[in-house]
Length: 79
Image (cartoon, rainbow, N blue to C red; front, side, top):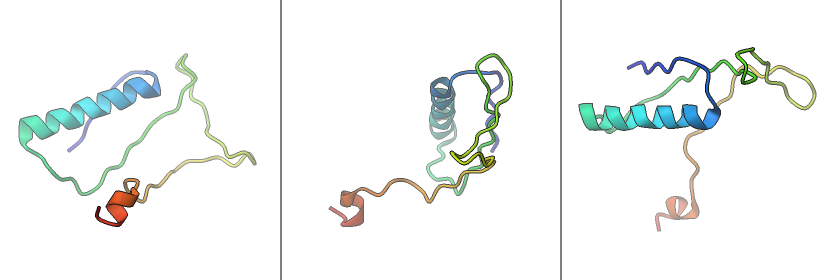
């Protein structure tokens, strides 16, 4: 399933849009699990101009990976 969010907005607003779409998917289609997700963003400067993300050493960052949700001590020790 694809979720599209057009237009430039703040990261906080984009996060809200994504959460709203996930909530709608859960409620409208009874989806309870998903296997994976690919998010593609175009970072901008707030005026529509694209910007390049770089490390402190100046290397361009084109991809970030997640190992999943943060595991709290309660999760780890099944408390």
